[in-house]
Length: 153
Image (cartoon, rainbow, N blue to C red; front, side, top):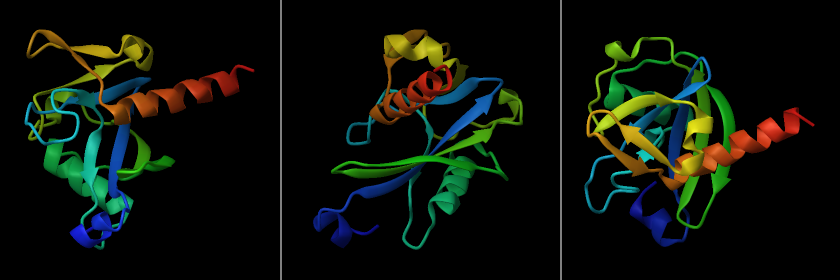
């Protein structure tokens, strides 16, 4: 989406992935770069849609650029629209060992149980410190919890 659509009040579109292995989610510790969204916070892998890209195409490109991961099957999970951002969130199984992933964007990555993240923080083994969660990850956790409540009624 170009500057024109942003100036007309439309949100930037992003595609994000909840990559799951046996119930755990793959998280990315974002870089500490001023000006990026949620610097230094744990988030989901993914990013902005380039002009002409579908959300699935953008997600596949971003996963390759960020961790050298190719995913065949992604399941649309939800879409949310805020004033600044439209999020397309997908789910997919993480079918390769963490050792096969190359972290090319971000400071760290880890597998975490969604229930572990209720404190709003997660610890980076690489940095040896606890960091907060990006708004996009917090939103995904809310969707996850509401699904759990719906299935336990």
